[in-house]
Image 1 (tube, rainbow, N blue to C red):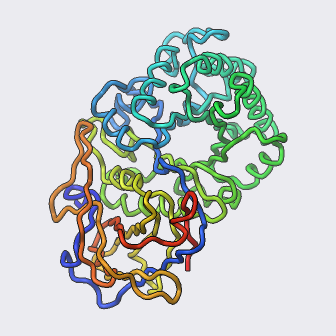
Image 2 (tube, one colour):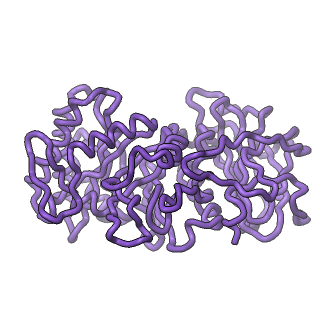
Image 3 (cartoon, rainbow, N blue to C red):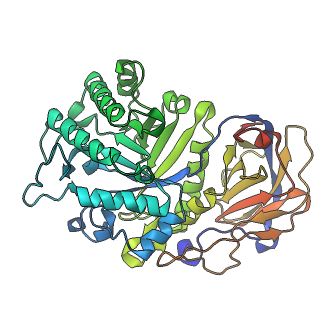
Length: 455
């Protein structure tokens, strides 16, 4: 089993015998396509109760998980300033806010989905302690199991009122609005609810510079509904960020998602996302989202951090990090993505991206999903010479297991790899992050850096 032995691998050229052909990864280094904020690889905590069984477990719910656990604190802090999204189906239609001044609704007897004021205060403190940016998916349906929009709006206002009175360091990053297509909800009605919540947010945080973002509609990709929804929104637009969900089987992103900064909630197939094979998908998934032309994405919120069949860590076994966790961890060292293209066609097993690190140096990610090593060489521009000099691989395992247990996350120090003429042999079934310390692409040196155009 690949995932048993190693998580993220970047080996030397001697690690495996490469194929006879060399894949040329050609990088257009002068033109910006997209810029990314810090914390691009983000994650979700859900509201699934422990009563749903061992797959989810007691640590799958933000209402139950031990926020003081060293294991949780360790794995979350290591991904800061990622967005910690508190979401899921239950968040958007079941959660009742209990004990907040102005709408002090009691938690119904035997009802699980109650976010109390003490628990919300603990969540705010947890986010501040770990350095993540908190985003809560709001309930737009009604308290408890009721379909009661006026009551939903009242409890949201009570939550806002309490939260706005907290110290600035506890201020959430954003509030999310989703589940608006439940029971065939029509787009104009959803737009009206968004406008109403936006007005409440502005009233509780009059200073726009201090106000949490409002994001939505967090629906699956339904182009007709999305277009109708956007057209029904009032001016000025109440939403700061367009969000959507993407799971296998729900189609592709509409163009609007590439034209408006968006977040991406991502799950995965049962039984696959806790193995190393998943890291090949996750690597490619993040690269595509980061390099979307016309604005790209602000964040990709992995569903989930803990709990379920597609978590980044196994919270039921001491917060053992799955291999995808290390892919997310390494993405923290990338400032902005660079589009890349390969001159060798077809090469279905090889995936790559290029990026700027915080100092403006070139970073190249290479994933080899095939059973043979693939020799690669890098080239700046369409007619540039191959890159000379060595590279640093941020993870090198050499057959030894990489692990993170109990919140003890390894630092992943770089290892210098001698790579003549910029060459690198991608071992079979591997993910590598390479940093070329002597290469400073022109676009990486501009204000804010950015994604470069594909050659």
